[in-house]
Image (cartoon, rainbow, N blue to C red; front, side):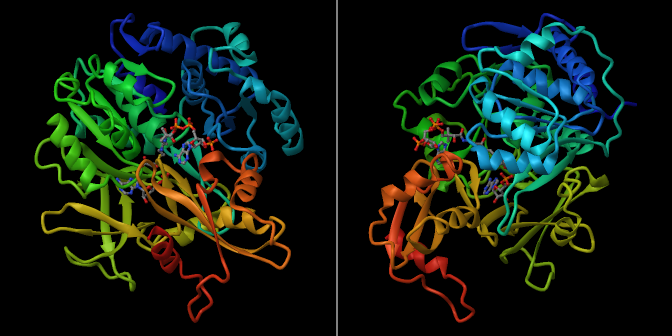
Amino acid sequence: MNDNLYAILAARFPHNPDAPCLILPDGRRISYAELESQSARYGNLLIEAGVKPGDRVAAQVEKSPEALYLYLGCLRAGGVFLPLNPAYQRGEIEYFLGDAKPGLFVCRPEKLEEAQELAWATRVPLVHDLGERGDGSLVAAAAEMPDRLDTVESAGSDLAAILYTSGTTGRSKGAMLTHRNLAANALVLHQYWGFRPGDVLLHMLPTFHVHGLFVATHCALANGSPMLFEPKFDAPRALRLMREATVFMGVPTYYVRLLQEPGLTREAVAHMRLFVSGSAPLLPETFAAFRERTGQTIIERYGMTEGGMFTSNPLDGERRGGTVGFPLPGTEVRVVGESGKLLPAGEIGHIQVRGQNSSSVFAGYWRMPEKTQEEFTPDGYFRTGDMGRFDSDGYLAIIGRDKDLIISGGLNVYPKEIEEAIDALPGVAESAVIGLPHPDFGEAVTAVVVRDRNGAGLSAEGIIAALKGQIAGFKVPKAVHFVEDLPRNTMGKVQKNLLRQRFSA
Ligand code: MCA
Ligand code: AMP
């Protein structure tokens, strides 16, 4: 049997070749048959370009049908897909290319020149461009390729994707996901959330992260369902499209924005059967307000790039606000104390997860065996860095994080990276970056800066302007405060809790 994720999904595609797979904003419909032939063209193109099984294919492109063909073509060719947020700037991309050494880098047309320079510097042999309207050299080259391809035979343990996640210290780490990880997660979620004939997914998430590319897309493909495939989230448009959809997945910011729409009523969502939220904590107020307005109860689930989804509230049975539900089938989740001792229900500790048959937890960090080892316990549990507790009914609540991480609008920002960028600016003695409650993004990246003796002219606007263009926009602080000193404990560690208290007031 072929354990290639594409083969597993394709075995579930509808028998009717005309069944729609993607429905685009301009009304264009792309059938499952076309998805198969297009992904074959892209797969053939990669093979012809010399991409061998296990070779990385990096893509920093906007969401589009062609971007999806590229991902699926990469799976079919046995390549390892490496999606990159278009918000990343030159320095960020240079690191990813240098670390992952892809055989091909696909960029946006407007960034072609920069991409070629970066590829040359990092010894990436081939660059193509792909525009959001299906333009660019990649599309032209794929069009010349045969539209049939026998999907490469893969073992479950073969890599399917690498997704970079930053860390509390040092460099970004590439989380290695196998065909088995992705397939197991897709099939479990498909079943757990009761995907059924007639389902239509409203897909408004970006496709460069686990949530949009894997959780949402794989569920729809595994069900042979159409996706209303939208370039980005837009609350009024979401409400209009919900009249034709049955399932919606989003980060909490999407729900906060939907609640601001007067048109969000029971009637507007009457066609919908399922709302899923994840990637960041859904405030109990948002959960309750959504139920009040729509009569629909959001299913909150919890996961990580390092393995996909770990827990979910149930489809049938109580969906409990403020919790992320139960461990998914095939995933073991435990809460342990400082000494590693298992804690009883009600006590807060470190959340650790383990997958049966190494299915639900990733294969480790790309070329970082020591870092990988540190993150696993001797008995094979992955240390998530999240703090939580089980209640007496077995629901898991995420209480906080023991990692220094900010989640803004569902996107992760590691303070260390921003602090390093700020500290390098002239006039800065040191800085601390914290997350403060934000009504739209959940948390807002906020910098607290100490000037040095040359820093009299330093302003908040100046710091923000200097960071833009250097790091992705979502990482740039929304506010900068100046202080004389950073509060430190006796160990010399900055007391970020005191800064959070002071500046959220
Ligand atoms: C955009 N901006 C942001 C964010 N997004 N600032 C803070 N946080 C953000 N998330 C900034 C831009 O830099 C820009 O700044 C300005 O906002 C407008 O940009 P635009 O793109 O127009 O914003 P938007 O369309 O309103 O986007 C906000 C968004 C988007 C819709 C919330 O960020 C989004 O779709 N987030 C979802 C991300 C996601 O898929 N996460 C899942 C990761 P300026 O004007 O200054 O230039 S997977 C994961 O976490 C795990 C596995 C899991 O459990 O799912
Ligand atoms: P990422 O590295 O992008 O995969 O983000 C994973 C992190 O997002 C987890 O470690 C959690 O801190 C957070 N996360 C994901 N889902 C939830 C949720 N439902 N509630 C709280 N935090 C979440």
